[in-house]
Amino acid sequence: MSSLTVTFVEDNGTVRTITGVAPNQSLMEVGRANGVEGILADCGGACACATCHVYVDPQWEDRVGPPDDIEAAMLDMVSEVQLSNSRLACQIKLSDALDGLKVTVAPIY
Ligand code: FES
Image 1 (tube, protein in one colour):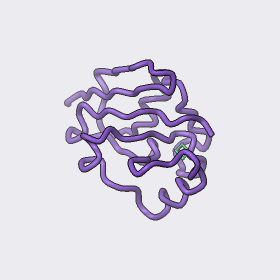
Image 2 (cartoon, rainbow, N blue to C red; image 1 turned 45 degrees about the horizontal axis):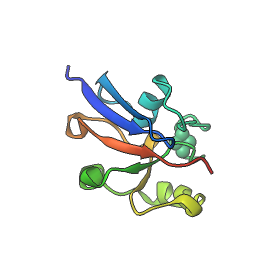
Image 3 (spheres, helix red, strand yellow; image 1 turned 45 degrees about the vertical axis):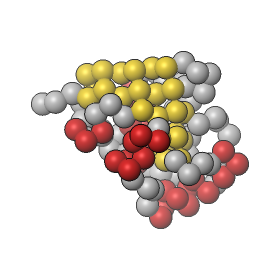
């Protein structure tokens, strides 16, 4: 089985590169398991809290893709800090295609 690398930039600027990540889990789960600051995931990944909000690095936007309608509605709840590259980390499922993914954790709102 392959393993992946993902990088989170925390709101305070700390860069957290995590290696050996198993695919088929969400980006939120990886953030939580590794203590990434600002990934609170209050709803446990049910797309119902927006406390796993990240900004996808521009280089990765095409591969990650846009949010679906339910996720977009949730992101509207944090519109004060929403950007065009906003996604909820619990809705990003990791795969080989996302090996190297880089995101910035959105400020907690
Ligand atoms: S963990 Fe709640 S929306 Fe992602």
